[in-house]
Amino acid sequence: MKKVAYIASECVPFIKTGGLADVVGTLPKIFDKNEYDVRVIMPNYLCIPNKYREKMQYITHFYMDIGYKNDYVGVMYLEYEGVKVYFIDNEYYFNGFTPYGDVKWDIEKFCYFSKAALSILPSIGFQPDILHCHDWQAGLVPVYLKTLFAGDMFYTSMKSVMTIHNLQFQGKWDIKTIQEYSGLPDYVFTPDKLEIQKDASMLKGGLVYADKITTVSNTYAKEIQTPYYGEGLDGLLSARWQSLWGIVNGIDYEVWNPATDPQVYKNYSVDNFRQLKKINKIELQKECGLPQDENQFVIGIISRLTDQKGLDLVDRIMNDICCDGVQFIVLGTGDGKYENMFKYYQGIHPAKVSANIYYSDERSHKMYAGCDVMLVPSRFEPCGLTQLMALRYGTVPVVRETGGLADTVEAYNQFEGTGTGFSFANYDAYELLNAINYAKEVYYNNKEAWYGIQERGMRQDYSWYNSANIYKDLYNSL
Image (tube, rainbow, N blue to C red; front, top):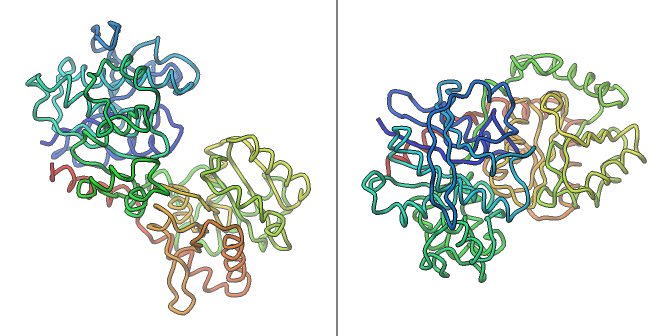
């Protein structure tokens, strides 16, 4: 029996702000329970919904030295869908209405969390073979394991894996502050370890000290070894290329299934989508206040509204997109400039643009079922889940060839009759417009080819089972 602890700041269904939560909440369920004992360790946020909090059981508590303080560490427990989840309890750090706050406060909070995640293991009677740490919030776990915990026999045989979900976020602050919060020794704050441009990076610490590194697609694993995508860590990642694995994320095929999804207007499958998918389009148009016409080419964006997502490209060509035969629906929140941008275009194209500046899980399911195209023109995209969900629902992705988008969407080839979507290479607004216009041309003028693209997309398998098999190989290599 191999024992693995997933250590992360988010996990569905308890708390989610991004794809990290989907990975941590879904992947442990996939492993064969006869071979793997996979458990999750996460913070006990006050903002976890009460329906989960009231089911938690108290396990134990103790006090832990960290930095200049002696902090309370409580452990709560809940088994969810066959996975054992431990919640580190400390009201001082984990109160509030959101899991994250300002960066300096989060750094103190996750220094505490990283040390507490290791400290609770003897008291819960779990001695994992592998500590699988996710993003900078768990970045100090491998550092603690190889430094302050190295002399304890309980921890000596443990290996660590560090997964990068987004290299842009590193938990960076000045060395003095991070050393004070973490209690780590001087010798780890050097250029070959935690130091980066005279500050300290918690993620860099994890990447230096972890036995293996993974990220969430093959292409992103290569991209981050270059200065453009490497966020100052390309040299380190190039040096550790033999320990770096790219493993594409999956999606939960039980939740994201157009044949059984209770949140869509009309269920459909790969066998009958030609007749039934358009019912979802009509109802979506109605709900979004757009003219109801099954022949309209409906483009969707479901995204955090940030620079990373390529929305500056969309802004440059929005008036060109909003021509005859096109409707555009956006769902998401983020930077004020992009929220206002979509509201502005809704104001000048009220029959063509629907700006839904909020997030709704239900509306997202309806958009995957009702749109013809899902736009993902990201500047960079470690993996991306939007295009995987779109493929599952027969909604054709239009993506930039970067990271996981390049790995999961095959560009349409009219001569060979292959491909599951449309793509463009350079970060250029008019290349994006060309890709949209090409998709529109196929949609209107070659319906059989369009149906072929949809069908091939729906038959792709991006369930977690494929990814889990690669993670098994990774764990076995340790």
